[in-house]
Length: 106
Length: 496
Image (cartoon, rainbow over all chains, first blue to last red; front, side):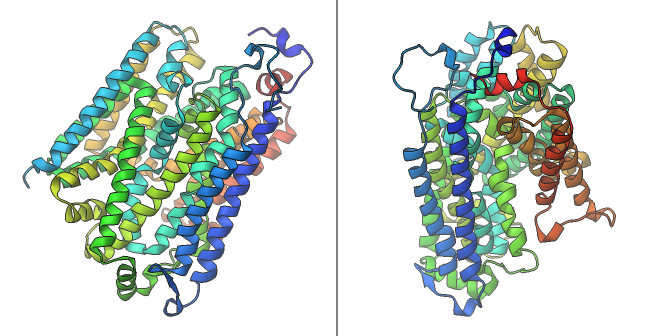
């Protein structure tokens, strides 16, 4: 790799901003998922077992925390990916031909 | 105990398909064999960065959910009830979290710098031989130990289900994994993982539905559990002192968020084709994680009612399966756990080979490496032989290393990787401080059974949590106090 390339003025790869945004979204979804799991699980499950209520045979704490939680966050992951993740080329930007339409990842 | 032929036949078919995949991938590997230097390794270790979304999801999920979720996990659920299913759901976010956080960034950077392993990337980022050596050693030792434990598990599973002697089962398993990994490389590993992921998912769905039907519905199963011990349907489990809230919640760090630092994940993030594959990978991965995690662990819990009095929790999955299904179907479904073990082992094997051939040899000793292919094959076989002999007679060191393998790998790689790609000020002394303090305190805290200075559950949390906090702090402080990375490194990683 030639070294003069690095000594030119530094220009940040525009894709990194989108990467950081997507990483923060993933982290955020993960933390909300944790809170949902924690809140329903220990919030409802901490009482005496004799006072549990049941949905479809499962204790309500388990149903909300684990079953509804799993379905809900799978759905949210799909929404996140479909609507908020950008399509970007992954290779070297210098190799992509000039004059393509506006760069949506920038 | 005689050999159960009708269980064996579907398994043999299954192994035949795996061989076919190996030979299919061999075509690509052969074409790449004439490439010199790293050209060959791009095919052998990343499948020429050409994975589609479905295969990406399956190979990722199959790799990290595997053995624990299929044998140990249901076994623990058998003992601890719904509390363990609850704990296992902390793994739920891995399906979207790992790829969202490092997926795209690693794909872009690894193409820029031509990295094929996580150590490659760390080498370019920190320009420190010590970092490379420490990382490679961590991979070789921890993964070889983990693989040995997995091979033993797989052989026991075959022994129990099919009735062949342990030694025969071990040889059969060892030869199969070695052959398809050696000849097919990452492409074979990813494709067999995809097949294994499908087998696992369908098998899990079938088994859990059959188990619920056999138990007379969820309600009667749950009430029978409560009758055995009310703790089995509480999030605190039957031993509230063991499955405490702080400890269970810290599994979100160990098997949920922390997984993002594992080399297997990094390899896969370097190997997919385009952002479409990434998106589909996240969606498939999350759905499959959900089915497998819920299904297998609930099966373990319900097994407590369906097949009470099992001596070892590890046997609950094979026992329930052989009890609920005719033998030939049992064979098909048992391929699931076996697939889980194989898909974990093959990627670990490839990583260990990558650590030796690429990270240590090509990067440090002889960058002008020729005949890379032959060297990679020889290494795969050599590691395979070591594991085989360890599995015959596990040495204490292996048992000890395996105990710490998963968390040890996370303690080594998590911060050097994440800070390396997201924080421009991260530098080599910081990364070294992080690895040394992370692995060091992790192992030290784990010594509570040898001498009084260990700390099994710092602040009630799982033992991995505090070392990760300490190593993050060490990384940031040391990086701040020492020289910033050179502008060349910044330009290489962040520039156009």
